[in-house]
Image (tube, rainbow, N blue to C red):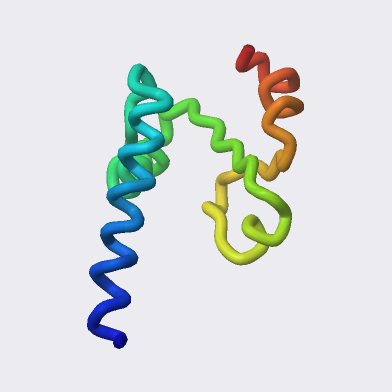
Length: 81
């Protein structure tokens, strides 16, 4: 059973990535390695906003991420709209 779980999980992520790409085809995608590289640059003026709920944020988040669980509020506060 364990042997079956890993491939199903990988397949699930492939499907999720494709759904996201289909819904937002013009938004560039960034993998975790590229993000980590960007964050290491002192000249990078990046602001990470994590809009997941509090429970998800508490489990795992990037140290630089600002938690704003309401996407609409994040868009207004940070002028993203």
